[in-house]
Image 1 (cartoon, rainbow, N blue to C red):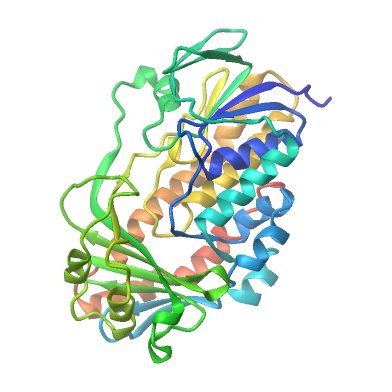
Image 2: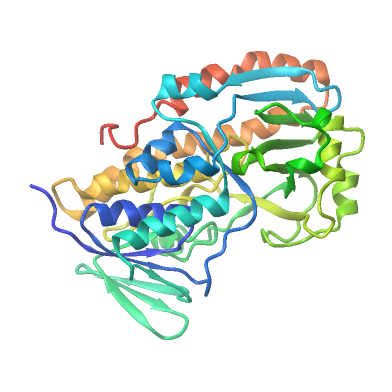
Length: 398
C-alpha cells in the first residue's frame, strides 16, 4: 500500500536539495526547503550532467527547459598539458545517449539551479523559505524539531539534510562518531568563464570537454550556453586557503599557475576577465556508510563530498533525490525505508568519491611516459560506460 504524504523539511536549496524537493512533491509529500541565504544566486560556473543524472531531470520535466541552453559534447578528451598529445578519449554525443538512454548535457550551473527552482515553485509556490539558517535538530519518536538562528523553529516528520560539506544535519546523524570535519585535500581550484568569441578561432577546441593533464596540476575546458561561453576549471596542488566559491584572486596568480601550457589553455587564461578569477580550497571527507537516523537523512555533499574529477558531484546528489523519493514510497516503517535508501546509495557514492580522488592522482602524474601507461591501464571509457553512466535512478532495485 502506498505511503501517505509526509511533512518533510529539506535543509539547503542547492541542486540536490531542490531536486529532492521536486521529486518529493511529485510523490505527494508536503515539503518545505529551508535555505540560509536571503537570495538564491548560483555562481558562474559550469556543470556536467551525464545520462545517469539526466534521467532524473527528465522525470522532473526539465530536459525541454535545459535543451536550449545546453551543450552536448562530442567526447571527453584527455590531453598532455603542453603538447596537446591525446592520452585517452571517451565518446559522448549520440553514442552516449544511444548507449545509456539519455543525453550528456554541459550547463551553466545557474541555468540548472534556476530550472530546479521553477520546478519546485510549479509544484508548490510556497515550498522555498529563504533566510532560514538551521542550527539544531531535536529528534523524537514522533518527529523532528529544527531550530533556526533567528529563534524560529519548525516540526517535520522527516528532515533531509542537503546543506553541503559543513552540514548541520550531518552533525546530528553522526553525532555519536565524534568530530567529523572536512579535510583539505592539498588542492585548490580556479574557476572562470570566458566568452567564446574572445578566443581566436584557431585556438578553440572542438565541441568536447578537454582535460589538460600536467605535473601536479590539470585544467578542464568545455563550452556552456549553446557554445557562447568557455568554462575553465584549473586544479592545482598548493597550500590551504579560503574555500569560498566567491573568493576572487589576482589574475597574475592564475597566469603563474599555467606557464608553458598548450596555446589553447593559454588563450583562455589570457582572455579572462582580470577581476573575475575565482579560486577555492578543495575539501572532502571519508564517505560515510551511515546516512540516516530514524527520522533524519542526508544527501549530496552533506554525506559524500567529492573532488570534481569525474564531473559527478552534483549528479550524485540528483541521483540521491530520486532514490530517496522512491524509498519513501515503499511500505514499512520510516526508519526501514531510510535504511534501504542509504544501503543502496552509500556504496555507489563511496565509489565515486574514491575514484574521483584516484583521477586527481592520474591527471597530475609528472613523468609523461608514466602518465601514458597509467591512462592505458585505467581505460576510463570502459569503466564509466560499464558502471557509472548506465545507472537507472528510477529503476534500480532497492
